[in-house]
Image (cartoon, rainbow, N blue to C red; front, side, top):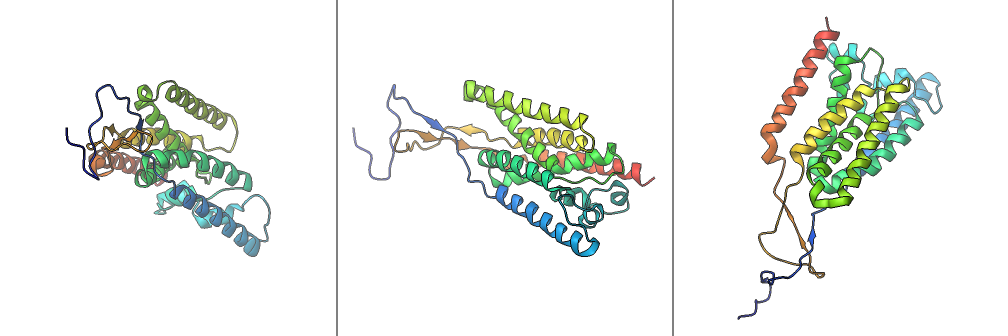
Length: 268
C-alpha cells in the first residue's frame, strides 16, 4: 500500500474510533449589540439631564419617545422605525443590566452555534416579531427593551437542542430542559409583574424558535477526512441563509401582515 503524500489524508482505518466536533464560530456581534445598548443608554441619560434636568437610574419617558420607543399610535402614523429602535432602548439601569447579562450569556451561545449572519437574522427578526405582536395586541403604553430579541435567541437555542437532542444525548436533553425552564419562568414573571411587555417576550420566543428551526446547522461528515491532532474531525454545516431564503421570505410576509393588522387597529 502506498503511503499518502504530504498534504493528503487517508480514510479512517476499519474499527478506528473517530471523535466528531461541531463547527463553532467566534462571537462578535453579541458584543457589538451590547456596546450599542450601553452607548444609547448613556446618551439618553445625558439628554435627559441637559434638556429636562432629570438624572437618575430611570430614563425620562419623553427621552425614550424621542429616541424611538415603541408607541403604537405613533407607529400607525408612520413611525415604523420604532418597531426596531425600541429594541435598543432601556427604561432604567436595572433594565439595562438585566438585559445586558441575558444577551451576554445567550447571545454568545447562539452566535457560536449559528454563526454571525444567522445570529443577526434571528436577533432582528425575532425582536421585530416581538414588537409586532405587541403592536397588534398591546396597549398605547410606550415600550422599550431588548428582551423581545433576547427571547428570540432563547427560542432559537431551544429549536437547536430539540433538533439535535439525539446527537447531544443527556447533555443536550438537560440543556433543552434548562432553556424551557428559563423561558417558562420568565414568561410567568412577565405575566405577573406589572410594567413588563410580555407580548414582546412571547412574540420573540415564537419567531425565534421558527427562525432557529429554519436556520439551525445541519451537520454532515466532512467530504475529506482530515483529523486534528487529537484524531477528531470537524463536521460540516450544510445549512445557510441562502438555502433558506424562500422560507425566510414567508416569515417576512407574516411579519408584514402583523404590521398591517396593527396599523388597521391603531390607525382606525
